Each structure stands twice: as structure tokens, then as C-alpha cells.
Image (cartoon, rainbow, N blue to C red; front, side, top):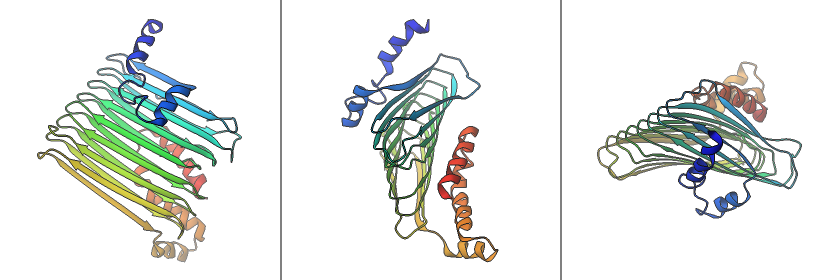
Length: 317
């Protein structure tokens, strides 16, 4: 049966609704050169108990990975998916990675999507992860943006149905001279929809990152609620970080809130730890883990927590 229905499903969903090939040059390039990926189809009233995991690696120098992930979770179904991106033996090579992930959550469906991006320095990454959520559907994002190269990332969820729900959590650690731009967006179309965003980033050395959070409540999406928080910690004078929370409200009967902070390492915290005999480097490591803990501890997928903690440890040493 799957052999017969898969072409029809691909024709219906692949870059037709959530992400369209003609949106911009990057999506057009992706559609033309896609060379890998995965398709997950969960029929109605089906719950997949165990998490599904995929590993995608860049193993050639001066090459490219154009990877596509498509998840279709029909009504009253559930799935947990975790993906890892990593580089093998190509550190410093000039590679381009262009990632697109499309998620469809039907009525009453739940999709938990986890990712740990851990690509090498010299790899420029463009990543788009988007979801459409129908009535009473739920999508959870747990994203570890831990690349060592330049990164442009977009994570967007459209809450189309009444009572739909989205939660997006992002963690990033920048180092060296890398440049990163993260945009998280939740669009409320349905009534009584809920959207939550939480992003924490740590910038070391001469790295730079911009965190954009956009909550858009459309006209007619009454009784909806949007909440977002972006925080950036800079560990050196040459590191830079920006947090831009944006609320766009086209409906009166809603609630929304935002918070943002950008700051340097607190010298008093550092002094306190060092006065207890802790070396400076170890003290900084503890402060970073404490800063990221509110996000990491809330990640809904246990395997992502473990992987992310290990990568954070490597990047702050």
C-alpha cells in the first residue's frame, strides 16, 4: 500500500504548502538540487511510541548537502522525530548545507521535532524548519543550533486550526568568528491557539548572533495567546548578540507577552565562583551551563537533552 500512496503523498505535500520551491532563491536551489532526506508518514489514529532518529553527515570537501525532511502526521496520531547533522573529516572545508524540514500535524495530532545541528567550521548552513498545525494539533520544536560555521536559520509554525499549539525552544553557542542569524516565528490563525518561544544563546570570542522572535496573531484568532523570550550572553568584549522580540497583533481579544535581554558575563558571579577556588575557565563553563539550563531542562525529548549537553560541553571548553 505504501508504494502506491507515497507518490500521491509526495505530490500533495512536498514543497507545495508549507515551504514552496518558488519562495526565494534558496528554496528554488534546494528543490533543484535536493540529494537526501527522509519521509515519515503516520496514518490516522496511529501513535508511534519510540522516537525515530536520523543522522545526516557531510563527508566530502567543497561539496553540498541539500537535505529534505517531510513529516505528515494525520489526525489523532503522534510521532517523535530527532535529527542530527554532523561533519566527518571536513573541518575547515568550504561546504554548503541547505536544509528544509516540513511538518504537517493534522487534527488532534502531536509532532515532537528535535534537532542537534553540529556542522564544522567552514560549512555555511541555511536551514528552514516549518510546520502547519490543524485544529487541536500540537507541534514541539527542540533545536540545538550548535554549528561552528555561519548559519541562517528559520523556524516557523502556522497555527491554522482552533485550539492548535506550538512550542519552540532553541539553544545556541557561538565561537570563533562565526556569524549566525536565527528567526523563530509563530503565526496564529485559529481561535484559542497558543504559541511559545524560548531561545538562549551564548557568544564566545568574536562570534555574532541575532535572535529574532515574531509572534503574529491574525485577525479572527480570538482568545489566542503568544509568549516569547530571547536571551543572549556574551563572554568576551568582541562577541556580539542581538535579541529582537516582535509582537504583531491584529485582534483585540488576545493575550501576548515578550521578554529579551542581551548582556555580558556578570563579573560578580565570576568573582564569587573564583573566590571559592574555582579556576576562571571552569567558572565560565558553570555560568554558561546555568544560563542555558532553563532551556535545556525543558526540552521535551530526552535524547536531545543528552546530545545537546555533550555538544555544549565541547563548545565551552
